[in-house]
Image 1 (cartoon, rainbow, N blue to C red):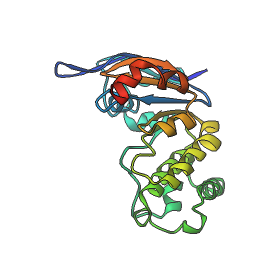
Image 2: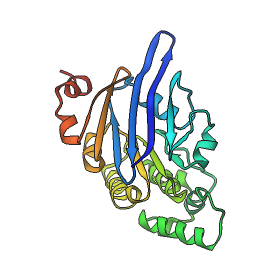
Image 3: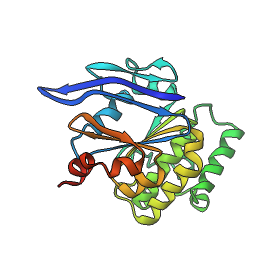
Length: 234
């Protein structure tokens, strides 16, 4: 079942098309990866999905509801949560408080226990009162993922979660996506790190110059000559 659909999304800046009639579907408990070279249109697509940019044409459907006209806050309240390429944590709040801030149902005993469990899942239990700015960058990215998990989203949109992180943090992020997040939400992953894409994605869509180049399993897409040419070069 498709939890998130983008139908014929088109966006231009000046005379250049950032996206040209792009359609995707993200299914329940599946991870869909979006790959492509810099400038391919990936960031524009996820900004449109999450309400930070308006499409010129096309629509975004979340759980059967057209969310194309909604604000980022309204889209978040509809069940879509996202991370960003650059961390957007609350640096004057502790790790535990950052995670708890993701709750959409208030802050009661159940939410506190869930925040404690997520802390444990990320092996942050002994650092619950530490501020995010004191952590390594990879750990800061994990806090973002932990916070969106706390919101119990229908769709989790991850914007390059492994960018700039060390290998140990990357492995922890991959493990959490595979063992926890994908069982909680449909996941849309934008990622440059091919090893991460191979490890977590059920399906990949390759985009180049605003158009979908090909769609398929990681094995199919990453060996497609069009993807090899556009993404990795000749």
